[in-house]
Amino acid sequence: MTPAERTSGNVWVRWRVPLGYPVALACYWFARPTPRWLAMGAAIAFVGLTLRAAAAGHLRKGERVATSGPYAYTRNPLYLGSALLAAGFLVASHSWIAAAILAAYFAGFYPVVMRREEQELRGRFGRAFEDYAARVPCFWPRLRPAATAEADATRFSWALYRRNREYRAALGFLVGVALLALVMYWRR
Image (tube, rainbow, N blue to C red; front, side, top):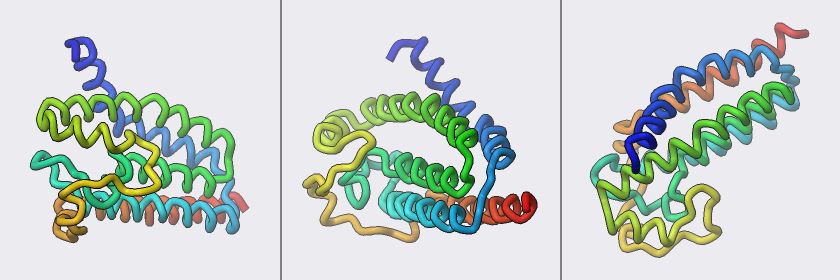
């Protein structure tokens, strides 16, 4: 990775979360939820939340390449889960404007962030990551899990879920659904 790519990647990583807040506010502003759309969207978002939880329970950050659980299907189950969460909230918001704003945000940030993280993993884990990347797709999941020695030995861990602070996504899900419900009743 060139110095310019590192600097560019750092900018994307550094601004991803701070810019997410005004994006979320804009999406809530344009939201027009109804009970039916809110229920459908919450169900989709819950699938994303569940995927993120399953991934967090297999992730040992900085220790080794995660290849078990959802990581046997996609190298980025946390981002896939986030995309499903976002899709669910977009369905719940029932707004094309909100969908366009959030889609632009995801398209602008997440591919760059995923590439940067993969470069870091290649640098840290070398051949282990290369072998894994050759078997498992970057984002869209495989239909069957990739065969790995670790996959059978590593099970979901609530301790890892807590250590990775994935409960924050669950709290965000609950707050997001509650805010959309408030927007729904406020707009009546």
